Amino acid sequence: MVRVGDIDALNDGSAIQNGYSPFTAAIPAVINPFADDQEISGWAKDSVYFMAANGIIAGVGDNTFAPKAVTTEQQAAGYAQATREQALTIAVRMVENFGK
Image (cartoon, rainbow, N blue to C red; front, side, top):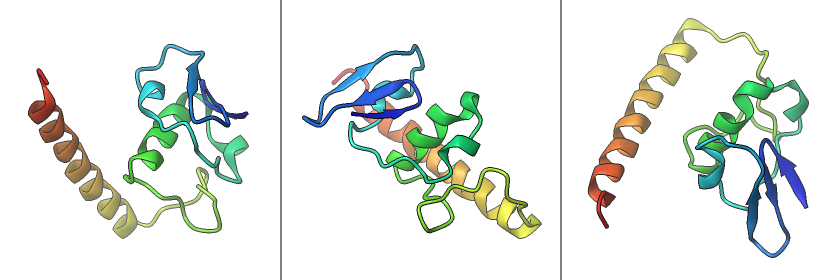
């Protein structure tokens, strides 16, 4: 069993949600935690792993997330644009799937 945020991922692919976060239910059962998981703030872990599981973020390489890294202005602008694009994509998917 692998513990990630408020979700327990079981070897059989099932998941048990222990918390109340709306994000954890959407996280696939098999997730490899970032090597620097202990540096990710507790309040952010569900969102970090939700975004990683959905291809919105991928960390900085070597299976690290680097939550304390300094970001350049250019990198921040790129992240902001990618976040807006992903938010729009998610919203469109939600509308398309509404009522199915």
